[in-house]
View 1 (tube, rainbow over the protein chains, first blue to last red):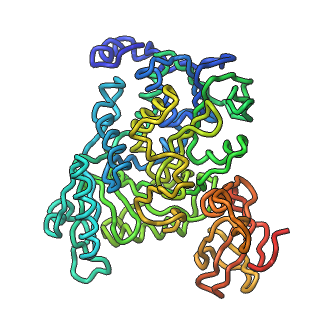
View 2: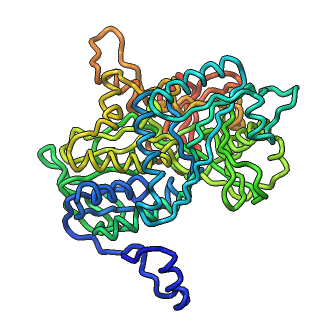
Length: 418
Length: 89
């Protein structure tokens, strides 16, 4: 594989950049693989990469119905954070933060990781107390957290509404300075390129039609490009998990819901943090191109549409304007939607299943992007070793039977309610 | 925007409604032994169909009645609405 560097850039400049190697190949599926990963999104690509890199398993195929990186890894708002209170979530996410910091070097691909910090705003004394508790929990788990008062927040984001007569005054906020953003497409492409170079077959335009299971063991997968035998199969299909589960006669604690995001026209640098509104559900950051990247609530009903409706967008942006009034002057550039695998406790599932050789990675709700490296790393471990790693032990499927839920937000089973 | 025909009030905008989830989920019958698996299926496990989906909505800013709606989860088309006590055919 060609290494990307200043020297290769200069060298290729002399040939008008016409002789770069393809970043990944377009192979025909073989009849058999050691591991087949279904879903060529961030998590699937990362899983294949870590299977090859950490476990030396390279006879691997990723099969993807559309094109790689066309689902949620290309549709999210690129926020990376580990500001969780519960140990299982905090330790998992912080492990991921470490992988994020090294990712550009590790993949030889600039993922533009920008640890600019995230501020969760608080709008009451009670909320400040909750944030103090969460911040303390984070620090006990080795994650950086700073509790800011109103004046400190004002210094960092003076464009927020600090006037006297507002419905939700800013009391302060909880900041994780090491949180940030990354270039989402580069994450998918970087993992794809490295996985491909280690021998992983990336097979696009390949839809799963069914599975071959016999004697309680997975035998292979039937696809639109032929039958593929596999010793092990990992599902990494986010919002499409239930569609594949139905083909396996499994019913999962997951519902598929629609989440929208949007960007404004590009403006000069105004916001160098990720900021979330504490009295509703709205988050914002500014991209390197200058667009304000915004998102918030789910549309709130089961959907596979990958496109949203206006009432939710209007509601979300009303919150945004309440928080930062200058947003009302901006024109909207784009809106889009993605489908989320909403689990019943708001936490993901990375586990084995009752079918031998079949592994499950799903339930990321609307927090899947930041988890990409840690999810891939732990899922690769779970598949390679046929046992969960301690980092994803809490993300087991059986917790819904035993009552050991990981309910970070305390919302109960209807995590799609806003 | 969705337009939902409330069986009590007629065609109304989505803004007046609140979503209540899969309408095919049945609480286990009382007065008999209920296994953990049955409870688990009732509380957590969902088919989350792609395509036609019967679901509960509440006409919150209207008559406040719960209703059943048959909607396509891929196209958002609404086919049929029923009162809460009417059986899905």
